[in-house]
Image (tube, rainbow, N blue to C red):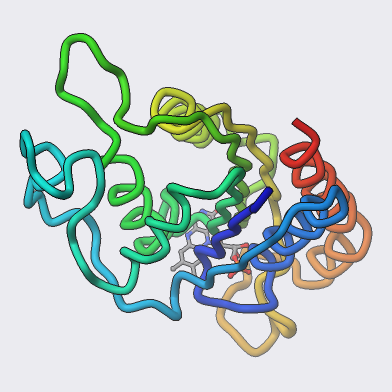
Length: 214
Ligand SMILES: Cc1cc2nc3c(=O)[nH]c(=O)nc-3n(C[C@H](O)[C@H](O)[C@H](O)COP(=O)(O)O)c2cc1C
């Protein structure tokens, strides 16, 4: 069994990558082989609408044909047994890199056929991890819960069952006083990082272990 984890944050060693790696450790604890991909190390674009993945009889039918640095990752994902994808929320969405991955990963499997839902020939589980500034109490009212459900549904339709972990009010910088960001209480965030974030890490580990337990 092989699990591939994607860190969709530009920051290594920060909130998203910590949770993604924790989930990967969970999968490893159940005997899964693991691979971590830092998206921001790769030079790639979103879907370019070449339509080669939909060309009848084409050599790339059902698979992304765009040969940049994401292509080998998409090919390895095609053959893996479980996926972990993490992203911070940037301006109300997943990061541009994570969204570009989402386009490329899912559109190759989208069919415009009446009789077939996906070109993916297996079903593999995915854990989706999001980190963000906002508090849990506003997730519904600002539309984030709906957004997370949308991504779960797309994975479920095209790739396999997806579960979501949401980590809120993350510790964004080691010293809030150095930056103009008075709407946040840096001390409170640090305490949250020490007391609540470890719970998110445990949840990530368990979700990762759950991927391999299937
Ligand atoms: C460009 C940018 C935009 C952001 N936009 C939002 C946002 O719209 N909503 C939110 O809750 N947090 C937002 N954040 C905060 C990050 O989502 C949060 O700090 C996250 O945990 C960072 O992940 P990282 O530590 O893995 O880099 C933004 C941060 C940056 C740098």
